[in-house]
Length: 525
Ligand SMILES: NC(=O)C1=CN([C@@H]2O[C@H](COP(=O)(O)OP(=O)(O)OC[C@H]3O[C@@H](n4cnc5c(N)ncnc54)[C@H](O)[C@@H]3O)[C@@H](O)[C@H]2O)[C@H](O)CC1
Ligand SMILES: [K+]
Image 1: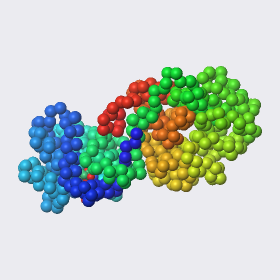
Image 2 (image 1 turned 135 degrees about the horizontal axis):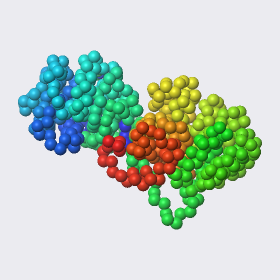
Image 3 (image 1 turned 180 degrees about the vertical axis):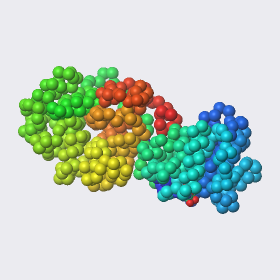
Image 4 (image 1 turned 90 degrees about the vertical axis):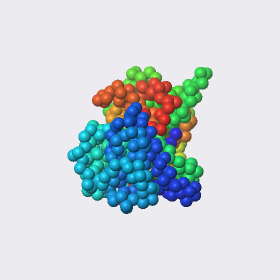
C-alpha cells in the first residue's frame, strides 16, 4: 500500500543500526547494492560481453558501490574504465576495500580530474556513482563539470544512477544546480524521499527499489515519516457482491454549483459515480438543480429554495436530511459571495463528520480561522487544496507553496490536525496519523480544469464506501493519477476532458488492480 521513503538521515540511521546491532558490514551491503545495480544493467543489455562502461566513482560510499559494480562488469567481459574523484590512497572503509579488489584485478582506472573526455567514443554504459545520500548543499564546480560530461555522453549512452542521480537533493529532489539525467536509477533498500519529489522526475528515469539486506525490524522500529503510494492500494477495493444493493455502494451528497460554475459540481458527481458510489445527490439552488437534472439523469438533486443563488435559509431545508448521507463533498463551483458563505457557515455548525472540503469551501475556510477551528482535530474530515488554495491559508503565493510543499503541509497538520491532500504533480497527503504520503504520478493530462472536482468526487465516493478517510484519500489520489497516466497513452499531447478522467476510472481499475510491478515504483517505464 505504502512504500517507505526515508530521508538520507533516516537511511543513515538504519545503516548504522545494521552495523551496530547486527554486525552487518558495510562491505556486504555495498556488495549487495552493486549486485542489484548489475542485474538492472543485465536486464537492459542482453549480452554484456564486449560492451564498454565508464564508471564515475565519487569520494564516499556511493563511489564504493561503483567500484564493486566495476568488478561485476569486468568479470562479465565489459570493457571497463573506472574514474575516481579523489586520490586512491584517500579511499578507506568499504570503498577502500572494493577499490583494492579492483586494483588486484587490474581493472583500468584514472583520476577524474586528469581524464580527458574528448577521447571517449561511443561508450555503451555510464555508471553514476559520484554522490549518493551523503550529498549536501551545492555541488562543487568540478562535480558540476563531471555531471555535465555525463549528461552530454548520456545523449547517446545508457546512464544508470546508483541510489540517486548525483546532484539531486535527497530531501527536496532539486538539482543543485545540475544533476545527472539517468535512464535508470536503482535505489538501495528504499527510495529516498527526494526521488519522489516532482523536481527530481526528469532526472530519475525509471526507478527501481532493490533490497540490500537492512533487517526489517530496524525499519519497523524507526519508521520514516514519508511514504509513496503503491499499486496494491487498489486492493482496498473489493469485487462487489453480485447481490449487493445500491445503498451498500454508499450515498454521497455534493453541495456545490452556481450559475457560472455548474460544471464543477457535475464533475464531482461524475467522479463519485464512476468511483462506485451507489447514489449521488447534488443539493444546490433550485433553478440550477432543474437545469442539471435535465442533462444528467444519474445525478439526483435536492433543489434548495428558489432561483440560482445560495441563501443562508436554504440550509434549514437540508439540515434534517444530512444523516442519511454517508459522506458530503462541499465547495466545487459553489461561488464565494456573502450569502453562500452564510450557508456554508450554517453547514459548518452541523457538519457531517465525513466531509470533504474543496474549492470555494476552502476559500471560506482559509479566510477565517474561527471556521477552521470548528473542524480542526476532526479525524474524518479532509481538505483537498491545490497550491493556490493552500496559499491563502498561509498568506503566501502558490509558487512559494510549491517550493516547500512538505513544510507547508506539515505546518498545516500540526496546527489543525485534519487529513489534507495538497494537489499538484506528486500530490502530497498528510493524515491525522502524522505521516505523509506522496503520489508517484506526475502527468500533464491531469492538469485540466475540472480534474480536481473529479478527484473530490472520487475521494467522497470512497469515504461513503466505508474506507477510512485517509485510505479514501490515498486510494483516490492513486486511482485518479493512474487514470491520468493512462490518458497519456491516448492523448500524449493532452486535450482530454476532465469528464474522461472520471469515465475511465472503472476500466483503469479493472486493468491495473492486482498487476505486478515488481520493484518498480512507476508503472510506465
Ligand atoms: N544506506 C546503506 O545502507 C548503504 C549505502 N550505500 C551507498 O552509500 C551512499 C551514501 O554514502 P556516503 O559516504 O554517506 O555519501 P556519498 O557517497 O553520497 O558521498 C559523500 C561525499 O560527498 C562529498 N560531498 C557532499 N556534498 C558535496 C558537494 N556539495 N559537493 C561535492 N562533494 C560533496 C562529501 O564530502 C563526502 O565525501 C548511498 O547513497 C549508497 O549509494 C552503501 O554502499 C550500501 C549500504
Ligand atoms: K549517484
